[in-house]
Length: 479
Ligand code: MN
Ligand code: MN
Image (cartoon, rainbow, N blue to C red):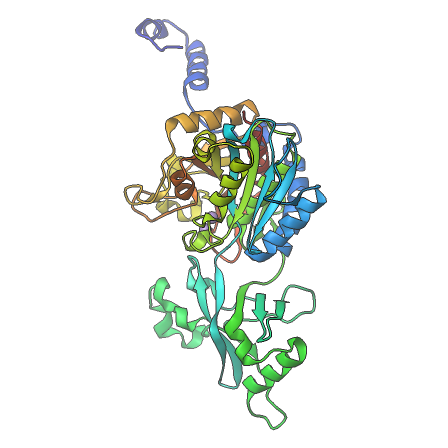
């Protein structure tokens, strides 16, 4: 409809009540406001809560990319998916998965169309900010044994003191034997901790800016305090204990990948339990719903592919990060198996970079442009561009692609919204989208809006998490 001059002229002749009705009609037809997730279907939050029980089981048992990849592989097996075999052509409806060095996973459901028609890809990452142990981590000071750490990803260092920590990872003995370590999650198990200075004597500390009050070299984890029988050498006593438990020596830490993450399980948040507080929603909160959507979708026309990528938090580098040829090589093999051209596959493919967005936080409203922010319970956030300053580092999805994706979401009654990270020049972020775009695959960011991103306890709404599942399912079934 058009609010033309004829209408305006008419307005003057109407009664106040008629005028209000007309304005209400204009508002309805002309103004935009994203709908709340609860408007999309009856009993929405009940369904969302039920779905999120599965999500909580995932995040409680998969705190690192290795654990997430193992979880996903086991789930894929449960759903009848088989390990990928490069010597066999896939048939329509067939499901396979490929683990990349145990730290990333690609799950594929072959569509009815030839691979040259492209794939619908949903790519999330399962690495989260944390404290990795240094290669020679163990030392003793002040009658305590410590691990030195080197933080991974973008953290606010002060978050990590006075917080129960768990240790996850692997270590290789000199003879090549692999030792898997997970301590601090099970009931009754000890946890670890970085101490903080008591306020009584923190005059100098509290006057420092947040960014420098706690330093990277200050993030040392207390791992022991009991000395040998003669009251000396806590470090040696600890090594004796580790040797008894795992058969390892100090040298074996040189061949380890051990990470400290917040200990404990996810929790429902709020009287109504409408949100989940947990470590590492970013980005397991997009990963889990995406893969469940792939499992649940009918045999698609276009091949459906879901990736849990590693190393996103440090720039998607490394052999398990999305910049690795591991992924493009796999796509090339899928094409070769059907005699299809890889270039054609890429050109015809479409991708959701499924990563979290920042939800507007009213307690820190000054950092956001509230008119262009995503809000909790308004559904998945479609982020056309990320980046910092003048969109630097963003792949900036085309209007054509945004139109195509959002029309699919609308047709499936998926609540979605747009959202920038924060105010212009306030900072910024990047995702795997630019890597995907470099393959010549159309890609847009779409994910769950969260609060306290990168904090040890991030918040996400159950409604938005379930909406992520619905969005990914709609996308996988996109022709
Ligand atoms: Mn992320
Ligand atoms: Mn992140």
